[in-house]
Image (cartoon, rainbow, N blue to C red; front, side, top):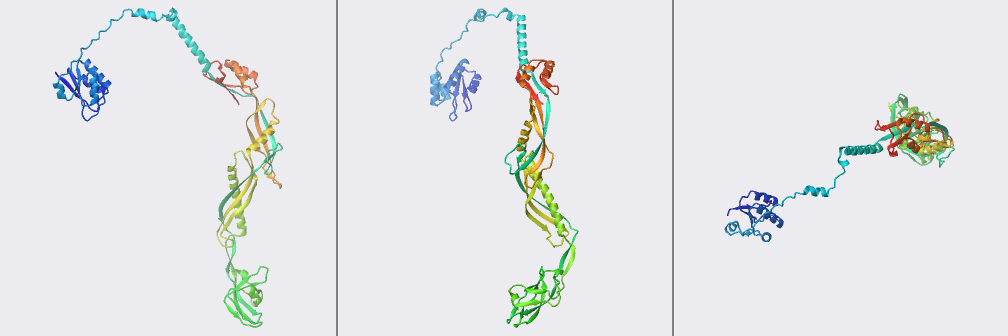
Length: 496
């Protein structure tokens, strides 16, 4: 008998094998399991394939050596063979007779059963008029719900206002610990170090030493021993500001009272200040002055000065003043940045704590066409916290508030007089404080007046119940809706 042999592959499953059955037009279908590939077909899959082959009018057989598959096939009555040759040679067991399904005769009383099971609707529900009325009632219900929840309104009221203003004399000091209604507020301290380097062109002339004066000094022995006068021995005049000279070479003064020796000397400092008259160099510095005496019979000359461009003391003082002014402005701006935007800086208390560094280039007495100053200064200042000022002003203004009014918005502060600090360390200034008062409005009363009312009547009701300085602004959504919402949640009241 003709047999369709189907060799399974590793990717085959129940669906793919069923599709292969559909192409088989033979009375027998033989499924062959490969030796080295794993085929996943459960016992339930084999049962489905067996029934599908039966529905095609074919008998199903298997070729496999796997014990589990053989047991599953035998339990379902599917013949199993060792090879395809054996399947074509050996007889197949007869398949049992197939049972034919005979369809049942359709029932003729289904409509009657349906009428018994399902109750008929009332006539008014099935009529056209009844449906129109039901639809109309539903639409009305939806509109009513929308009318309750959809409309929103924002109501802006402008109640009667007053301006409250007062001038407060303020006294600030670091010795004050708390705010007082008398105007005393604590002052806080703050310090900062700033530096800068600035220069300007010099047009002044200064005197610069050009050469040193030279002369002869006569040394006399005051004892009976030889005295060694080394080079660099210092002698000087007896003036208020002594002018010093040094010997130029080593020499020995012979022993014996009033023995003398002339030695060349030179001024220690250059310039014309080293020119002195005769008999003016009379002092020997150091212990050597006990053994010898000195004098100059002739003037000591040769020292000279020259005029060059250079900074004078006046120039240095002028530059220092400019630099300090710039540093003060820089320190004040940086200190302002460190405090709060509403804190009050007491500029009158800005002072120099110490000069950290001050270097001129060139140094004093040195020539130069430009003078520069590198300066670093530490400053200190006092300030008043905005919270302390607000506490003082609020306490002062609240004592004169009108009944039925309440503060609205922030206070406006204006310093009328510049802060000035007295000798005791107290800083005084006048502060003007202004704020707006609005008549109090009961929002619950507003809700009760406007809920569910028309727009035209609401404005009149609000004007008659509240003292308003301007007409209220009504923003209603949607704009064509003629009534205020009934739900207070959909009404927002803003006071300006």
